[in-house]
Length: 102
Image (cartoon, helix red, strand yellow):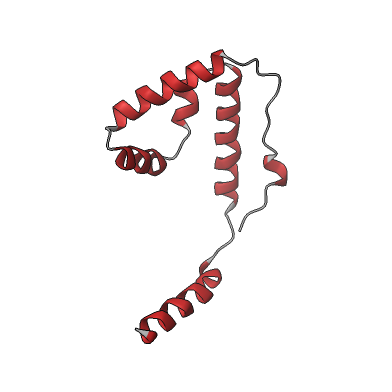
């Protein structure tokens, strides 16, 4: 058991060595995704807001909730619509230019 624990500790300590810098293409894609999300939020377009979420993220929620992806999207659109109807969005922003990675 100690050998397994020692191996896990070694892997955790080595994990930062596996990290890599983001590419220019990844940073550009992030900026484009944030712009799409911002536009959808300003327009109160729930489908557009959900469309930019990573599929694996949505799959994890659907699996954990024991619902289909379609049912998850439908519920999210309905609940987000209700939440957005109850507020007045004055401003929202994400500072992509000063994002730190790593």
